[in-house]
Image (cartoon, rainbow, N blue to C red; front, side, top):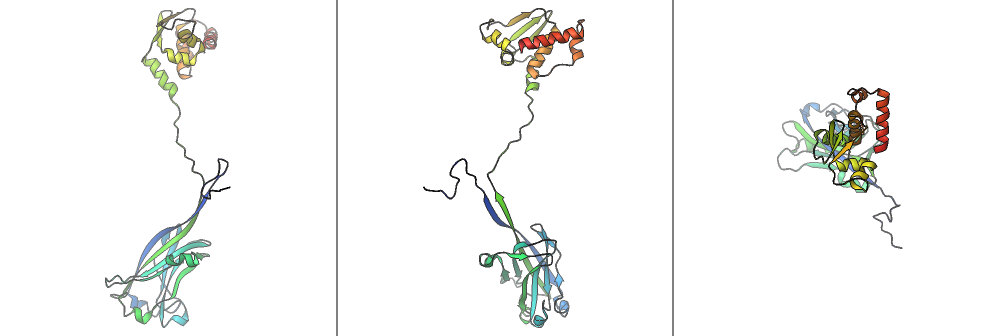
Length: 286
């Protein structure tokens, strides 16, 4: 049996995929008055402002006299620190000391290039750091194009690792509430496209055969069956109050009844009898 590793085999199979990616961001840090920072002592640092990348706060620490006492006389140290609460934050880093001569010969220490070798670096908790204790030999730094007008400039890039799982995409289209009843009632009230007239007592009501037939088996038989005359454009009704028939038409078109007092307001018939007539007519026609 041949199995396609890329797709589910049948409709009963399901699939998903894990996507590992980085949320990248950068920060530019400038140190003016480098010479005045010398002599702070090993382990003492100058901090950048905190910056946000991937949902965490970060800071750059520059140690002019080295991070450790054994390096204090020879190297400057640079580290990127997790400056907010976090546990096992996995990230890639890049530190670039900028060449200020315009030649573009920057000093780059990149973790991004070595991701396949060692994977992302894990910062266990707030204050955890990634960087270099021996970032640059001090004597070389102070005679290089990286130091200009007693100023150092560096660029930091952080890529926070995020993992997400994708399953089948389910698309949905928001459907607004139906206003079909109101639209049909508008046709009734405006008498647009009417093709049948009901004469009820001294009042007449215009309507639409198709809508009535769709809503009432009685009207369906009357207009499109064997009971009535399909070519008729007028129907006379007896023993029905006009207000009752008007209310019935509104119900057929909109599934709503007018206010009860509106129904009985134009007739002297008792409310109980009027309601009984309405229910009987609704049952008979709808």
